[in-house]
Image 1 (cartoon, rainbow, N blue to C red):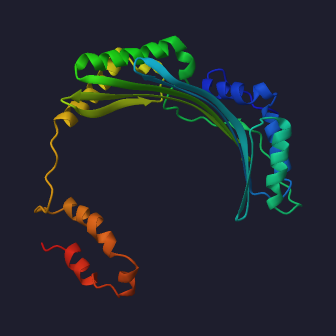
Image 2: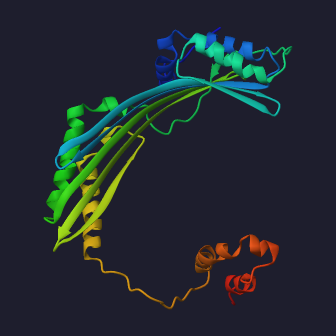
Image 3: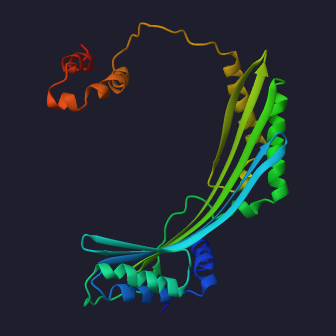
Length: 297
């Protein structure tokens, strides 16, 4: 028997549509793979299907300088027998590829085992983000327009802004895992990222600032308010750098209080004094390290 999905399980349904249905695979085929693997004395096995689609856009000097798009997919097979673990992978998701990988991984176990393979069933889990496809959520012309608005916001904040570089990236990742104990689970992971870098110039001096953000949403997350905030932070950082003065050079007195400053001192000095020579007791710095790393109360 195959797995019957509930209509309200959107994530699992979409995962099956992306990873199983296009290749004429059903859950009964996955159960058959487990039966073949467990025919040897394999203690545990799982199948990991993944489909990932990603894109990126870059705007510089007011024009799109680069863009990329790629698709990756495949299935991984793992078998565990005692202390031994075998892996096999194929970027061809098909019944033949699954059979080949299953036969390869089960070779780690000796023959002659008999185990009952439970029917696969969906395992309910809590989803922390919606199964959006960010790449399909916005047309290409609108993605470019978003980067152009971000550039305009940055240039309008300060006349000293001479260059703006903006980047937009999105990813749509679908994962489905089936286990030999009968559990199946799926996840759809959207990811978007927007970044901006500005260069300011004044009196022959140039400095830069950057900002950005993102998360597991679609491109609708980047509202005009969010774009304005990214632009303001990048310009503010660049202007602060522009007005910054060089730090004084030479020896300076450093006063450390109790608590975390002791950790800072340890990380800066202590590790260099804890090498092999200290372990062997032949370091001339050993006494110094003990005195330095144990401040008086």
